[in-house]
Picture 1 (cartoon, rainbow, N blue to C red):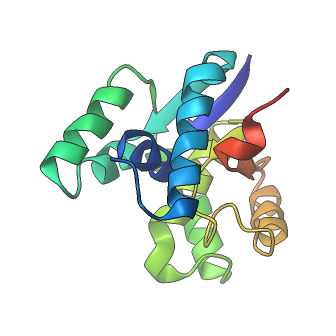
Picture 2 (cartoon, helix red, strand yellow; picture 1 turned 30 degrees about the horizontal axis):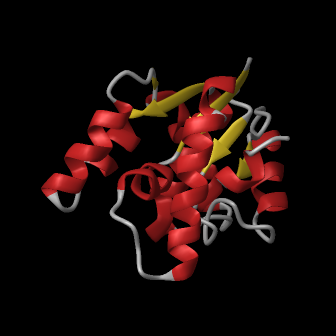
Length: 155
């Protein structure tokens, strides 16, 4: 079975109240469809970083996010620190977005096949993808496929 690392933006779209913004509403709908129809096709993982990020913000929204991830297995964060540092130090991921580098690194270090995200600025970004992959490989790790739920909908 293929493996997926669930980045926090996916949880936010999954559990948020419907948005009036048409693009966001579309992403929310796709996320719910993926969760309902495709999630069972994958071994889904998160990390303590996801838990920490899910706890932030509006308490009611945080509660909804935490309920969804309660039973998901956690991947170790510590082993990914060096790769995350390399992504930042080599200018692939901005220092202010170091948490995004850590999400990528956690998935890579644990051999996860897909990193599912709606963060297209720093993670699922076509311009950054080759640079992210190059750094991961230079550090001895196969990078995950960085994608949105829409890209992982299958047939």
